[in-house]
Image 1 (cartoon, rainbow, N blue to C red):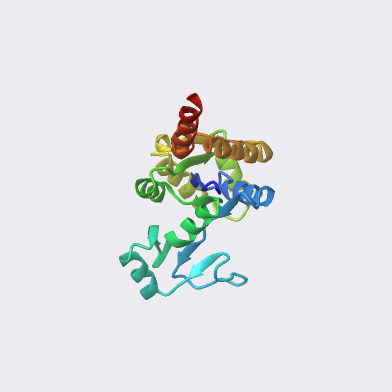
Image 2 (cartoon, helix red, strand yellow):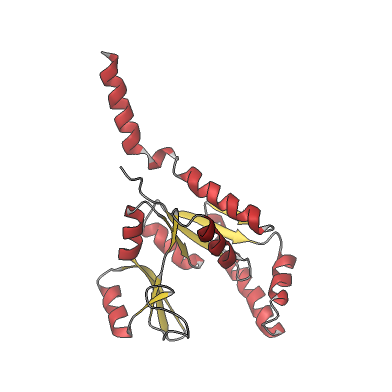
Length: 209
């Protein structure tokens, strides 16, 4: 029997490096993990492929998906919808892949409501100073944008305690391995192995006589 995958939600401060960690985790363990692909109503950017970066759908189609309950979670940002298609996620979990969703706190808590077994991971830099340094180090944003991201981090910090694990990203290599071992350890959690426990108890009972 193929072991079912675990649904994992990864959130974290903007600038915490969660995107880099995801890329590295998927590169090292391509057969273990699948990154969930979001559906969106925004137009594809250059080089983006439907079904690879996103599932690109019309506003009408997206609203139908909402009505039919085909999305695990969704949100609207600046006139465009983004959401996680349930079908894709369930298919990957059934294939035995651990599926990772990279979404913000609000979406994460909604997923947990719908799938109580979801593993919630929060990625943070070692301290606030380091977060600011990373945002400045990108060299792509003005100080105004950096300030607003730091303010946003204060909002993002509310709700951290709802997560199962904190992943402190001070060293990429260590961080990726830590995330991998947390997820794999989670497969052995007794509450995820009720079927196995039931079978082994029955086998033991049978062998007693």
